[in-house]
Image (cartoon, rainbow, N blue to C red; front, side, top):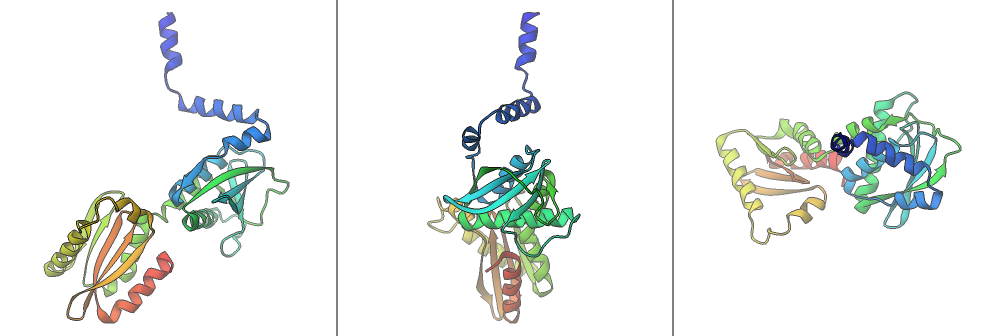
Length: 262
């Protein structure tokens, strides 16, 4: 019987462990609590996950400072397991009750902060005297759901959808799923496939893959025939090669800027 009880006690219970950790944190003084919030997130995806995990444990109104490279980059206000707002805000004010728009806006703000600096750290500033920041709130789940719309695969596919009317053929590799798709005449697909293989196995590329993936989105244009350009777009491990006429290069690069920024 003693052995049976011991086995039952040793059975992993993530929910109980998380509750136990939260109760322990509730009993800490401010200095000790500051030390527990020193977790650093590298990159926008980890930053969103870190913020979501933190606000999912907040009940009473609390101000949380976002720091990058030791400097304050913004302040989050959370209450009742929801992200109330971010200062400074990004873009226009969100109307009260528009929770999905709030999640998208907050996710964009957090990703933008992390992309500028490469990572973030959260530090508690104590209770928030005013929980409202003039905008709608969102849950941690909604924040993570909104964040997926800014992922590498989503942006690459958005770019492809936007330029499709001007494309004669394309080849797209989605890094997260590892799937590759192609469309267009055999000759165009064959040329794009050869370029893709050459870029993937070019001399000196070994050992630099991770640095390229962290460098942010990039685009380039290569001539592949009379009056035809191959636009090569990368975002993380996802990449797109699209054949377009010379006359469409300007509008395609404009579409790139609208989705990925300068």
